[in-house]
Image (cartoon, rainbow, N blue to C red; front, top):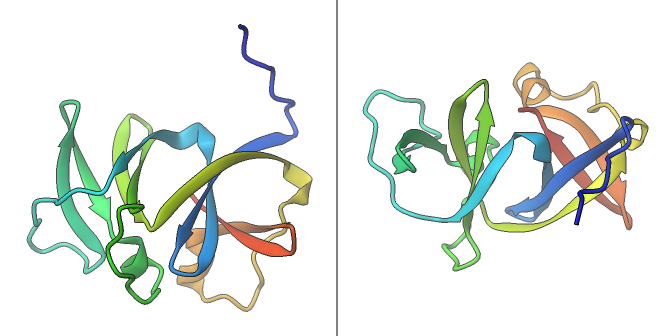
Length: 141
């Protein structure tokens, strides 16, 4: 069956949870979602770098999303996942508490991040989308 064409004004977002908040990332950059696994420690890296894994012959640094986004750590769960993204032929993973589903949204429904965010927060957040009275924070890739 042929894939449905995606309108140019549409954006496919992967929805996931970190802590108590919902987040999204552009599906275009998602390579795969894997179960959480241990990672080799990398010395002298920022505190939010969880470590390094090998995945299909690629060395993939893993970011602890809780630490990167300054969100209190959650208890480990079987629902924990690592979202692997590929940008410019470079792989990186980030931990999420739970991966949900993919939604399609119109680009003009995504609101810019509030101007009150700090510079660091602004570089991480691409925008905000509201669905069923819940805010979904769109992360930059």
